[in-house]
Image 1: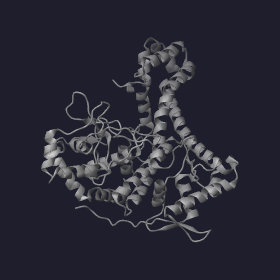
Image 2: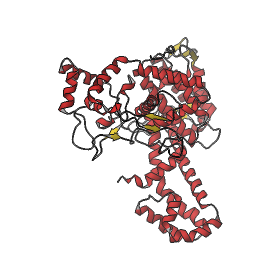
Image 3: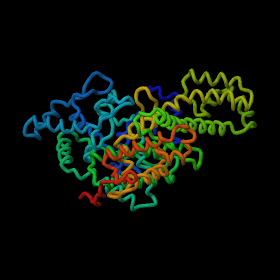
Length: 526
């Protein structure tokens, strides 16, 4: 049995109440986007769907990734001689089958760990660029005693489902916007009929499962019989509306699905990161800010400010955990009178006390630690100080570990931050993220003055780059560094934009940000 029955189980339950039931570490940026597309396709491109269908495409994937690692075992995946013979029947020669396999292998989505190394995934966890919806499938895993692989909930069925819900809630009051998103994605994922024809021929020879079980997986609670399903703690947050508008503006551009997928991944991870910080920010109207190092670490003061900005946002996550747990603990203790009545009972039956706090799944060692302190408590104050401190310490490291890993992964895979050898995590912009930023701020074929662009991304996202926004935020006075550093940082961003073909300079004083793409015509796949 997995050790997830320990503190991790409690941290998962607590984080679900803050961010939603599905956010866990381990999922890579492209997997968020792929899962969202899987869910949308399985929901027949309807953002108000209550459930969706999943695809395994097991035999197709075995064909594509034949010879690849299979699980933790030493073996590799392979088709049976009979299955190979079926494939040869559909081709004029065996070489043609090898060419088809190589074509699909070249569509594998690269996944990387925190150090930039390629993630060591087995064939059942490998994914393909979604050139067509037929290349979308859920992760599976071989289990002992089962003839066919089962669906795996380890990396998939997490943030992608929640993002689907965000776009659904964000378009509840704008059905025109919803239809634009649904129609455009359906067109992008169904237009490549050649891919569909090849996949259909392969699956026709190999994979009969797609014509068999069509289980519906819940996206929302419909009635009391609905089992595990994804949910968001808040369904009417205005930030979902912002996400939907940004997402629609990006996918409306006349860009093919291959390039769009990279941009989509960057936007989705950026939005999910914003969502987590938004939910963690208890300061009311105060904006969550990001100071970006646009000089690639060339100036130590700028790099330090960027790293500090990242650390402060991580602190929001840590503090949210602790304050949320404190509120739950205090609610459970209720009052001095209640504790006075219950304390003797809890001491007599400590397991009941642990269950009452939601900690019944703690390991034996951790349980004993809590019980020993409980035995020494004589009143409400003892529980609120001594016991609270012990329980908080037990869960705190686990809580922080998993949630901070989510935020760091989103930042890194979204291209708006990360770390390099010898430095801490900080905010910076990759070319891919910079393009996304322009495409969601500047409308197709339109332009915006550079300084206005800096103002917009500060007001909208809390992005601090140069002198004006540094003064507006107050970071300039706090940092006590020379104003020229902020000016050089701003100039570096200007150069990055120009290098990416997103900025045109008319003079030293005038530069325009331009979205070079046209909006695609609205089309429906027939």
